[in-house]
Amino acid sequence: MNDIQQLEQRIQELIALWDAAKDLNSHLELDKVFDHILQQMMHVIGAEAGTLWIVDAEGQELQAVSAFGPAAAEILDVTMPQGQGIVWKVLETGQAERIGDVSTHADWNGRIDRESGFHTSSLMTVPLIIKGQSLGSLQLLNKRDGEGFTEQDLRLAEALAHQSALALHNSQMYDELNRMLLSMIRTLATVLDARDPYTSGHSGRVANYSLWIAQKMGLPLNECEELYKAALLHDIGKIGIRDELLQKPGRLTQEEYSTIQQHTLIGAGILGNMEPRRAMEQAVATAKSHHERLDGSGYPEGLVGEAIPLFARIVSVADTFDAMTTVRSYSNGFTPQQGAAELVRCRGELFEAEVVDAMIAILEECDYDLSTYKTERRYQI
Ligand SMILES: [Fe+2]
Image 1 (cartoon, rainbow, N blue to C red):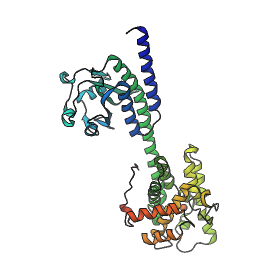
Image 2 (cartoon, protein in one colour):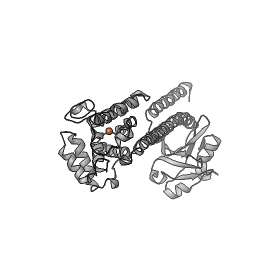
Image 3 (cartoon, rainbow, N blue to C red):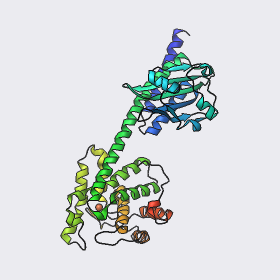
Image 4 (cartoon, rainbow, N blue to C red):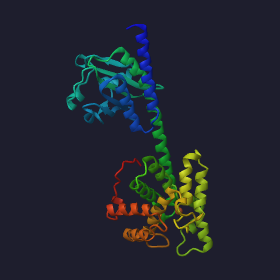
């Protein structure tokens, strides 16, 4: 290979690397990042199959979180106990390994080949390490042209592994932050609900119903997640309303009623002060407008129709249904069937028709027992 050819090859490698890195950083959801990292690596290097192994939280096992190739289904979710096989060796030493013929190699553990029926001949394994933290290792099997992986393949894989480790680290941090945020929001909602025995579990149920409605309406996953959080916090402003007023049995005076109505504005005020502001916009709008009604008869602003934010239109149906069907200081509660009939009666007038239809479809699907309802779409909550 002459100098120009070498230079051309180097440029090709850099382009592949740049492309892969650009693509890797465009995703933050962990599952997508796993698949992306592996697919990029297989594509750039040219491998028949590949597996991405990630260390579990205790550092005891490597788990196959992504696999592509003929035996992918069998390999996915397989675990490798600490110290076993090349994937662990590479991770522990931090040194990539390239093997031309695995059958003669001392560290080769043929268990997965035997279990999956796949035949591994050549192999390349690179560690995913960032800032001294071992995240996992990435294994490529059988070079596509059949001649085994080259020294250049190894160099490229190592460079790509560095980018991958960075993307992986970012998405793991994002995942952790997201879970932490969700658990804090849940705790806040639980604390709020616990103040009043009559509303115990209210925010959680409203969040579930809102999520199910949104899924039924076909909202994208990120909006479903956003709505779930906003719904958990919809009544947060009740923190600012006195207990004896919230729990007062019987009719409220006009003055008491307008004080309770303030919880929408108080909630919007509380959430509006949280950072980052942009991330809280939907939750602010939901807390403020979940008592608005389509015909303008709601509060605090008397908004009409689509002037009411979509999340608030969804939460208002979920909230009203839960309020109607649970025992309150001021009522004994409707059956789910009676609650559904009431929503239908107000369909298109107080509540958006599409939202009511989604809620009714959900109720019919679970035979009016929402505790048994199973959503069709995966969402980790
Ligand atoms: Fe409310």
